[in-house]
Image (cartoon, rainbow, N blue to C red):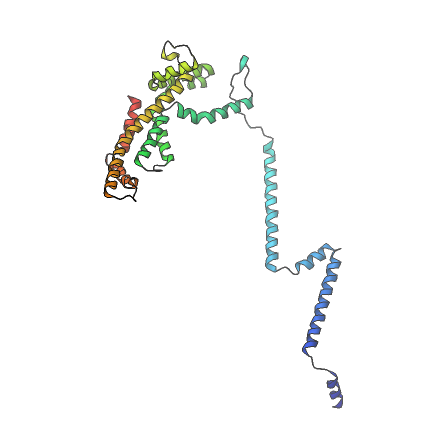
Length: 315
């Protein structure tokens, strides 16, 4: 009993200060071991990596492994595609030759042929606008939209699509004649490129002469100082095309002015009524727009406009 009392008396009860000291000692020992492990890991990369990964969460480590596998998979696919495309790189694809004759009968080089072809493709929209009824039709349709007071209805895409199909309808006989006289013989090597151009330009000249005014033709004959043609067939395309453009612009503006008149009357009537009533805050355009649209729908305006416009090309 006395021995037990002495043993018990020799052990002091654990105080908060002693517990904190023991925890600090254990933390210092852990930090020392981590520092020694990190110092030792400078010479051993695997050990350093293992020590660094001890503090990484399992979710982050799993995401890193999945990302690494994706990168490896992508590189494998790229290598496979490169290996598959390597035999095709040496295969020679057939080249399309335009065989445009040059001076002295020598052919034009392939790069020059590509440049000429791209230039022609870039100028194709301007040619379509310049030598077809597309110009007059688009001018009339845009005037009609402004007269109705609808800023963007129908949209430009709708108007251009309608004008394009109407242009194809008018130009279909001319295109067929050009194909029969120029393109088909050229494909069969029956005529040269110069002969095909001369044969194909004649139907186009006949079409342009139908709608080009004499005053505009005389203007460009005077500007270019060309000799006076004895017959209309002697006129060159460099004179006919600008004369045709001026004539089409004038015709389009004339039709547009006629379309504006009934809608202008509606605007004047509505404006006078609004001012007489004294409604100054409300713009007359907002009131007249429904009346103009209603009038256009009641008289079947689209049918009348397109019908009258197309008859100008067939008269």
